[in-house]
Length: 455
Image (cartoon, rainbow, N blue to C red):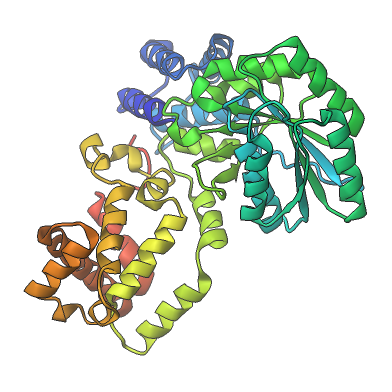
């Protein structure tokens, strides 16, 4: 998300290098480029106008602090305004009510509403440690109820049954009663979507809202629709008292216009964003972290939180103990590390949050993808346990068997073994020469010593 906008802004800010002061002359072109970058990102025009006006007002004639370039001062101003536009800070769900806390999910068909119910259920159960029940009142879309039942089983939450012959209002009221009887903390109500906003849809969801009085009414919207997402959210907000927005499919949106427009147009906070297809690919929306990513400065806080939630601590301890005993890094360890990385979204997921990624040439970034990692894992999984533990025994005939077993070429097996050898050497250095600090210094050196956006 924001790839195009981030690239444009990074390029634009470089033009302020070497200036001793931010003035109307040297900022005029920069502001024009920022305006064009925002419009190309499909940010709503009223948002662009106000954003540029506020940036210009703050930046005009500002003396540059000693040792800080005008470029860095301007980036700070733009960063602050991006945070302001998107809502200052993350706004958590309001669950402080007598159980069950009812959350009503609204949105157009195809926005990913039912999947978001599954993701939010998993988040509430695993991260917030809440008991959760879900119910579908979508009696129009074929298999909508079955889809939610399957998701409920997958994430381990309660499912309240319903069928297409029932009245949506009655289903919702009965679900609330059942949740109370079972002492459920949170009830998520999945409503019917439509291909467009219509009176019947609004009338039905308004009746449901009045009947169950939810503490949260979340609008689920596809971020790839750009500023249309904000306009649709505004229309829903006029009919329903929305409390927040969930942006879906942000991993497929290179522009980011919806994220920068929704809060300004609706006045409602973005509470979560969907960052992938998996059921754990839902993140709380932190404006300050998103702004940092837009400006190419990474999102290390989210990366640390994700690591704490998703990485297997037992596996990490196991590897640490193995190193302590002086045992080497083998292909089973290599496979385990790749599987751990997959939980974090793979290489592409990590790159999006690391500082300085904007400085890496596109041709290099395009070569890094999760398919390569999948190929490496397939090759290792085609090996015997002995081969994984003793890679040195993998010679000609074994290589041919391994390649045939995973549908790859012998050259691919050779390439994987070469990458493993490089990783083995790196792990050995980490163990003998200063640990992780030494490894990070090597990585930083390999990236040209850059830690953030160059100014």
